[in-house]
Length: 358
Image (cartoon, rainbow, N blue to C red; front, side):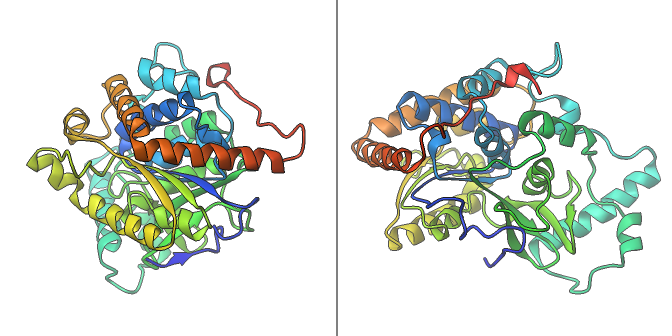
């Protein structure tokens, strides 16, 4: 799918791109899944924060942003595993009012939001009608059943307002043009980081689109749950892909769970074949049957994240112990050492603690 690059062009990275981590979609379950993956990678000496590029879609955009601004990886793991919130006492990590807070007060308000949300959903799938409704009509029929006020504040708590210096690409989808929009490198109309995180994770029907100029941006998973090609086009030679919405081909889930993942899985396979043709090496981490059963169909639930993180950590360990994983790890470490030598002395990344707050 074609990109719009006015919000940031992935081909102009702050430094040469050789290594990349791609974090895919998956709701709150996907956030916990990524916490297990990055913990296992760090324990194996493949520092995820040292990657030249982080690509995030939906849940991956949230974890990727937290990772990129320099938070301690052990804190990310502990928070997902303990289900505790670092900013509010006696609250879970995934607070219900952040995941979903009712945006209407009356039946008429609900009806208006249902109409607006249905329009966004159909524009996400088919570009019809071609002409967009006038702004007053769009404002009257507001899309999104949930309020995002608490969500934006939480994203700002987790990642701050400013974009990190290291290369971060967040994938969203513009329902006006039907094209993917990659938010990343500096540009005149780049939104604040929490707004970009919202744009990359605005699930149709559930959350309202994020307006950026003439664009209406929603969850990047409408284009692809992974968007591996963003890293390939940026020049990455080694890519680690964490894809909670796909499944392991040699260990597929039960039929109903496989049906919910099939389209995402096929899209990922196409992206991996394209990466191989481009001479790019990939290491893919995706759930097997047991993990998919634990994930279930409700990917936005507020509990059970510790088990998800444990299983994804174990799956990542298993992948890294394979012959292919060991070869990939050696190449990754060599690339990171070369990148460190290119950096000037004293340019080490600061580590921030989520528990310290802001």
